[in-house]
Amino acid sequence: MAHRCAYKVSQMQTSFSEILPVRRGFRIREAAVYMGLSPWSVEVLIRSKKLPALKLCRHYTILKEEMDAFLERSKEAVTAA
Image 1: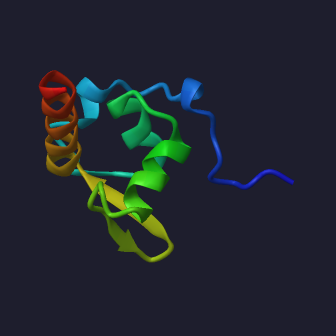
Image 2: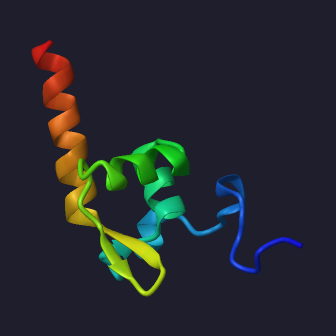
């Protein structure tokens, strides 16, 4: 039986330009699409404390500012190497 909240990243119909002005926090799957990573990779980054996230109820919420800061740090690390 499939989980009622489960959906594939490729099936997301909402574009980020529509939701970015309204929302500051994103779930793992939405953050993965925004950052160009897999949901598993995003969860590993959260658990290793490399990507700050809030745990609200049973779900992680990642702030857009934190995703942007992480992507900037990653970009700087790649260009410095």
